[in-house]
Amino acid sequence: MYIIKVKGVAKIPDYVQLRDDKFTLLAYFRVDRPEKSLDKIGLTDKYEYIMGVIKDLPFGKILKLEL
Image (tube, rainbow, N blue to C red; front, side, top):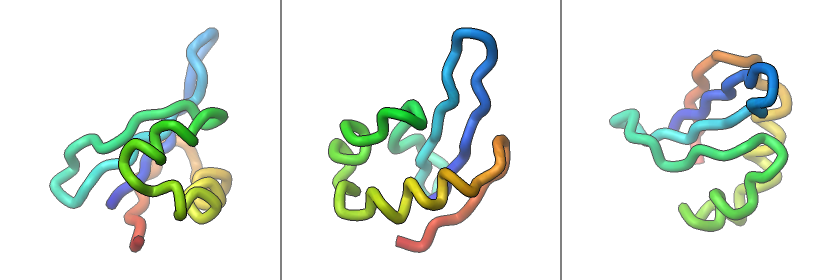
């Protein structure tokens, strides 16, 4: 799984994309509201880990997650 943090501009907030190994979009959510999207794809139990990665991830960088 891959994670990408996208910088928002003006009134558009920052977003996060979660993609599978074929780079298909699994989830797209605001940095400040991840709960519903993570629950929808079954990653609620990985919430703390994913949010820790998002906090340290620079904007525009693609990072491979090993879950």
